[in-house]
Length: 110
Image (tube, rainbow, N blue to C red; front, side, top):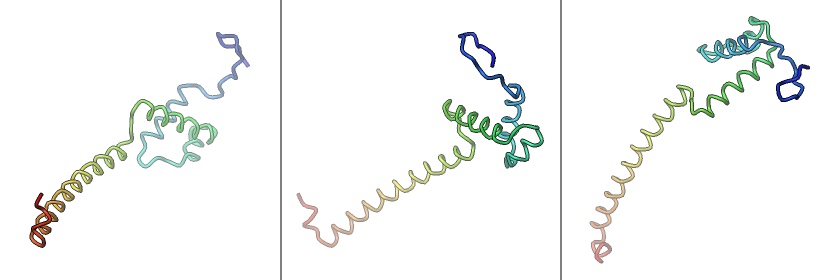
């Protein structure tokens, strides 16, 4: 273990930072993503190390507000659907008031 600038002992890194970032980028840019074991074997890294790097990278992206495209598309779709459903509810409420007035006109008088 090598001392760091603060005087604490830190374990030496087994894999260079360039390899880590390249491996994560390859995984995140692939569509569909390759199996971690296969990619790890191709890059000659331990699969659990690669899995950890990917998990950390995703967490950092989410902390910065980045979301996967599929998640953004789904959110947009759900927002549109929500708006349509709210409009439908308003129409049904208005129709219900009209029908109630036709059945018993005294209930609407104040």
